[in-house]
Amino acid sequence: MRQRSAEACRRADLCGRNLCYGRMMFRLLLPVLLGAPAVLRAAPPVPPGQALFQQNCARCHGANGKLGLNGAHDLTKSNLNAFGRTYLVTNGLGKMPAFKTKLSAAQVAQVVAYSQTLK
Image (cartoon, rainbow, N blue to C red; front, side, top):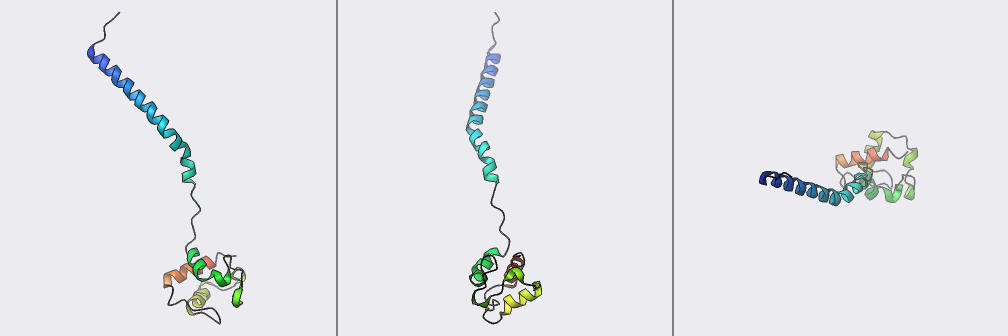
């Protein structure tokens, strides 16, 4: 039987430790890796303007735009283009308040864009 040199024994020991370390890491990380797809499935992105619409418009128009409280129009049937909607949101009409002092122009544009998705 051949005698192993000290160097060969040290290499074998290092390889064994690395293999053991690799197995240990695999066992520790396997549950994390198997759970990763659940983490990657995030909720669908919220359309810009939806939160602003919910905060400022939904109490009369409803979350889906159909409520019609206090004479509010059904936004799902509206024929107004973006310009008309921007004017109404900014300046108000009848019982609908003007939002020019409450919302910035960019926020009004987001609310208008979101309201156009309510069909």
